[in-house]
Length: 614
Image (tube, rainbow, N blue to C red; front, side):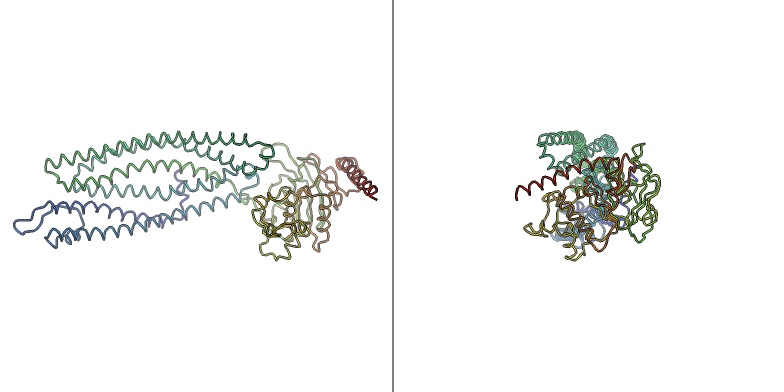
């Protein structure tokens, strides 16, 4: 079953594979004739001219008849040698030309298969649901898209063609050797069952070890990826020593797994080398004995030793094929583990309506697959198109989950969500996401210029539109302070920018496209109150008013909204304006009493400072 699944990954490349097989077959047949040239040459040099016809009799050599006819057109030894040399040269040119095209097709087959599989795997990863990506290790996914793909495709192309090469070489080698000395053929074949049995035992032993190697390498890659991504956190806590020790532990586990595998590989290859050398010695002994009994001549012995190599070394290479077969099975299992994960688009809608921005939650409930308790319970609210709505609540109350359900990253289990009176689960996931602009608390920036990061969602946007988006996001003044302005390259994940600057770049990126729904998931947390106010005022001043949802812990941001939704323990505690909620007992009033006093105290301090200055 695992083998069948492995070979299914090569689907679509049969023609290239057959071409490579044909070239390999022809090449090995021509190669099997090369030792016969040597045999004919030695026979010519050792032969005496015939008494009756004054010709040179060289005996039977299993070369094609047209070559023998070509050699025997002249009875002069030097002329015969010259004809042999010319024929051998032409044969080698032909053979090496075949070899060139054979290797070219093998390389094309390998790269095309790897490219197709890598794209297929990467594309499927893109289609996997939000829960999968939350639980997956980035380092492990990278290894599956690189090392595992390379291991699998190398076996399906290179090693499978090596297997064809093995059988073809055995056949032609045995065929040519049989005409020289049949005993040598049976002696060579007698050891094949021993080699095959040893190879099977070796495979059974090494398969589990290779699986352990893959797992330990994946674990090590995850440590490297996490450490590089979180280098700032590591330095902030002076945790370098701990991280180095963790890496040393994982590296040691990986090295030990490799050492265990290498010890088995060494024993296997050492044993196979011993068998091969022993086989050669037996063949030489048979040749010497046959010459003494005048059943063979020296020319036959020389040719047979070259042909025996076609029987011994390919069989020896069976271990390498089995070795890579074990690796490929493990690698393909890891690839299939991803490919067999259900795509989030298996459960998708088909509608693509014109979105205005009306949002309605009707008795919506949601729980995560790994828990029995609902995170959201019978949530009801109504947002009109063009409204600005703030959602506040304690940590873990379900604020971000509401946003994720709107983008169909999570599927709700109860109730219904309506977008412009259309059930959300009937709308295409990609379409609804294309109609929503989201700015996260910790936005991801690419290692590109500021301009490219803003325009990345709308690559055809004119420069004026990008600059206008930066102005609305209160980023223009910061960009002017950069040495290269909009062409300033930000570091990986935007590390060269401050938290507030990263958030404002993300806001500008969303504003480049006019989308009917905007969501700010605590996206103004890293900017000061004055900048927060500037951004919100600029958004309100736009000609095209989107439905805006703001998740925030800052009451000064929430109080400016047309409507405030208060979440408490997964349920709606209250809905209203700031004036209404600030006088009602509940979570909002508690937060306002705390933050409002701080805000008033801050204002009084500013007034006292102004008085002292005057």
